[in-house]
Image (cartoon, rainbow, N blue to C red; front, side, top):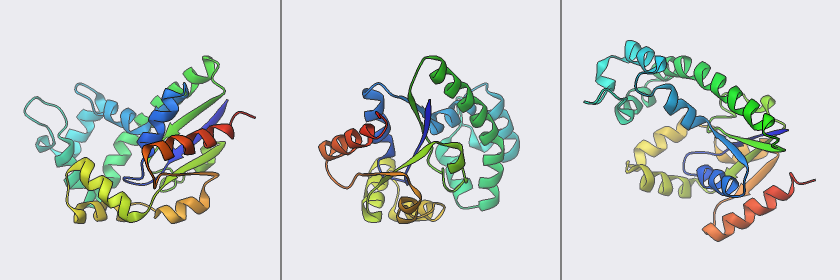
Length: 197
């Protein structure tokens, strides 16, 4: 089975590409979803995060307040590193389970949707890497609209990521997401052809 890394940058449209691939019948393992599960209510990951960051990261129903935690870690590299040290090993283990499941089910190709693939030096774990790209201005616009945050907050998060133009140079395949949804569907169809040989 081909194991393909799918990445991009904040607001580049990686999740849209992942959804199109799923609609086409491909297995797409979502790192963000695995990370959310890792800190779900009653999970050991949440207990560890609470021990490190305090009870103020929980909402009134005892679940993780993601916005509050994000504010704490994106402004503090040490806090972000601590959070990653808790969550990443759990995510890696769950990802391996999903990969084995996909292979066992007979999948020829499976994708791992992982935002910080290059930042975490994961490229060697994949048979190939796909980068979803658009202009930085488009990234900022989409992220502001999706998350309801200020331009400054988006730019601060982008500083924690390798610029898209650098990721493009390191990719095996690039999906251009600077056009319409229909354009993106066509781009993904072109991408899929590369894995049908």
